[in-house]
Amino acid sequence: MTIVGLNSVLRAAVLAAAISAAFPVAACAEEFQAKLLYCKTCHGLSAQGYRGYFPMPRLAGQQPQYLENQLRAFIERRRTNPVMANVAHALSPSMVSALAAHFRNLDPRPIGGAPRQSVSTGKRIFDEGIPEANVAACSACHGTDGHGQNEIPRLAGQLYEYTVGQLSGWSKVRGQGSAVDTSAIMAPTAHNLTRPQIEAVAAYVSNLP
Image 1 (cartoon, rainbow, N blue to C red):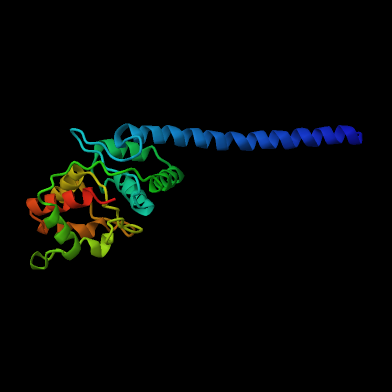
Image 2: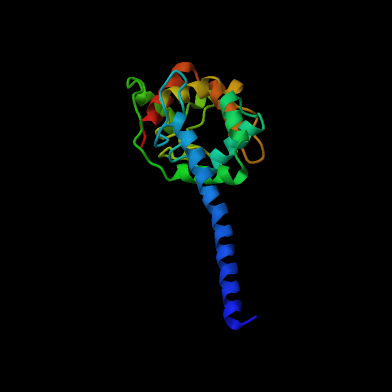
């Protein structure tokens, strides 16, 4: 084989390798966009949440580790939601991580719309807790800004109706946690809060930026 012929073969091999490597990347990007579009259908174009008959939670700005833990909880049936269980089962571990990282970087304004009359009470519970009811300050874990950290979720800007529903029915919709999912520690707190107190906290955090 001549040098010219050898060079042509080498160039063709390099080109073929480049094309074959590009196809998986393009396919992954296309799959990611498809999954993201599906998420937006319920959670809003900016993942700001959606206020409907079934309130859809805000995912924007959420802690990635928390989102990954909750998607695994749906897969493992530790958290009950027939729609999300089916959605989560269709996600690969790498896709779960990619989606969680994407939502972390979104920061739309909170939807708002919560009742205002109990916001001051909600702020007091958030900052100080209710010692006589064995309810710790929300800020102790979720941060003074309500943005959470690692496996502790962001509460700031979360839909009022969604937060009320989760805290009111914690024992029904949430499981017992796992080695990496600390959701179970919220069970006694949710149990010890009255309905008006839950609504007050939900109103307060829904307007946090």
